[in-house]
Image 1 (tube, one colour):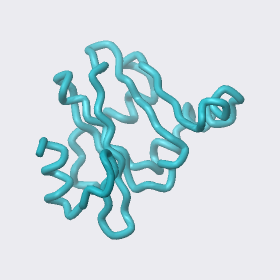
Image 2 (image 1 turned 180 degrees about the vertical axis):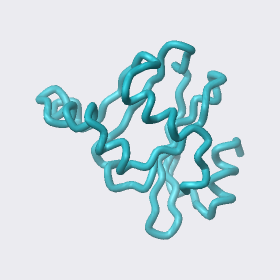
Image 3 (image 1 turned 135 degrees about the vertical axis):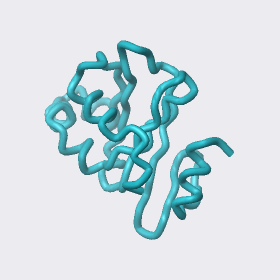
Length: 120
């Protein structure tokens, strides 16, 4: 069991699928990345995650941070709201994955929740 799994289990979460954890009515999605770098961050989400409690972005395999991001914050961000209205987003099967420059607004949002296990 890795660091993320240990933290989730210690917070009362139970694994119900490969990357999906539940604690009462709180659902958390864990996403691992090997694309993290000093200048970019890969961020992805699915439309079905909008009602989850949080997404845990785990970049630890690439010596990056672990960020527990509330879904409400991610889906309220201006970038995601604009993206969700585009035809290309609808045609994507309602999910998005992209590498963003480290100074992008979405990266700054995700990194603002670095090591924020307390929100779970």
